[in-house]
Length: 187
Image (cartoon, rainbow, N blue to C red; front, side):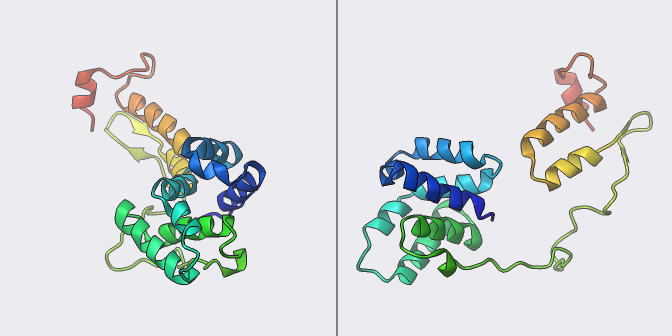
């Protein structure tokens, strides 16, 4: 998870006040304006706001911060199906924004080497330099750009690239749309 959205969230709350915590749409709009490329982090932060994490943090002055954060992290995991890291990111971010903890107190995620694969996992890519993959005997489609976009987590551009590839596979680039029979015969 990236630190920039939590830093921007803090700046936004300082600039516009804690009343912004009562307006999820406006808070989300500010985050998207300031750091829109971090969609996952924004989703997690706004989900925490919607689930009442902010109100719980503000209204729980008698509970030790560690206990409160642990309970809220577990609640986010259970309610939204988030990983512990994602839930902790949301809860700790809001605790920092609301001055309940310092940036130094935030737990850093454990980073596993990316080339370590457990027995149950398959590598996502077979090589670091993917070659064009043949779809049929007559058409060859290059997925290199799509793979790069997905690795960079640039999902909007990846969606557009997927559209181009699907049209190319169906030989419908000129028409720029698929017919029902094209979709039914899609490899």
